[in-house]
Image 1 (cartoon, rainbow, N blue to C red):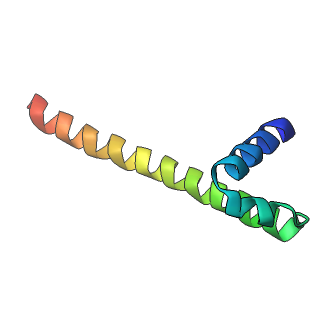
Image 2 (image 1 turned 45 degrees about the horizontal axis):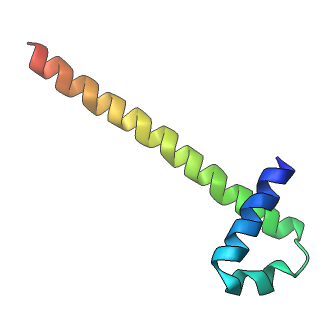
Length: 66
């Protein structure tokens, strides 16, 4: 997992030189918490969106089958 994060950071720094200056600063627990918080919110949004699409799809399928 650590190698994957470091590879992603290296790729981001290569693509966006402005990030390289910020990457030189030490990573704090608050920054890591914020990153994982946004990832968690994204995962929750994906799950809720998937459930909503499944419900809508079920309603449409039920309406078409009758």
